[in-house]
Length: 532
Image (cartoon, rainbow, N blue to C red; front, side, top):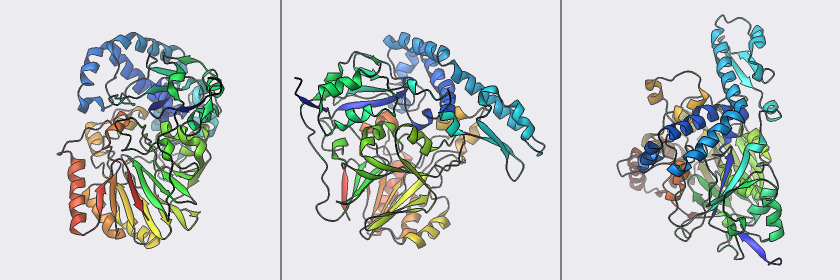
């Protein structure tokens, strides 16, 4: 057995965790993490312990299970959840103190109404935040503050030891619990290895999706940190190579839809991947997905659109880090609680990252890519970390808009003068999103009224907005995507559409509209390769 070589099984799923909760970018940044831990994680776990029967019943209803309010654990796990609460409240007490400090700082800032200099307030900044914030006034004398994120990552508040990765094996009928509402507890069906995400040891394991490694290498990784769970780590591996591997286009270039909001634009010279959320290959869906072994051996540019977990998916990013040359992310406001720097987050977990300004251009062989302004879908919050991507390759022009909402058509008219007409326009139509507080409510320290929640939602484009973009860019082909249609993404999308769902109604309108104009249009699903 010592001479055998092993591959990571294709149906092994991976969940990066921060303190036993599924890791998304805002849980990497220390101050946002403290807010989510106190106002979301602890709140949900205490609710489960107090009334676990309600949570269990609610999770049997698909419409409620993905709403983010019900913990998907069993009655037998109540004691485990209690222990996790105790750990949070004792070992993680500093995060409660940080969250209280943010609340106190917010109160301090709101109390300054004179419009005069804000400098005397530095003495009143809560002790935990002293030296980590800059206070400032805008042009209209409104006070605010920014977090000095670079310092915070080098402080005691960034605890790499809370990071771990859980491994399990998917069968055809397995459903993973919704990631934003359920802690990941060690059990007989998983093994959790505690190592910082930045550790190069992860690359050894994830390369084994395609390239074999020895048992000694496997032992090296799994013996490098504490483990929990009853699954033998050798059960994750096989001597069988992956069933499918990357195939570069024989001639020319391709734009390949790789699931949810993911695209790969590639040829024999260059590969650009956008918003990858890579599916695991089980027998049931093995012909419906592009999985890890089908990605190119080198990804020149990994382009990310915005800081939501279905677009910046740490689960997928960690597993392809060894392939990625440079990650391109949108420019950040710098220090906003609701808009932490994607550049700093990704640097902390081992990536080389470049920020792009609006309309900034990167050259490609026989083409270019450009960062395009992204409006909407963030509840009117001042979040700048969002961009769409324009790619020109071999004379073909493509736009990947993710969840952009065309709230200002004049902007796209200006952009069209620069990009020219589009050969492919890919646009998301999640036109009825959740209230912004669903994702960002933990970061607020004041109650938000129902009328504000109902008004300010995480909406993408509807029929009117999307059809207007088609007209402005004179698009020759349209793909509707990022709707969460594929059932294997239910663990992070939590949607359950019917024919009457507004997202389906609106996208059907766009399909009919394009048909009347003889423009090819489809709702992307599974795999779609487009020759350029």
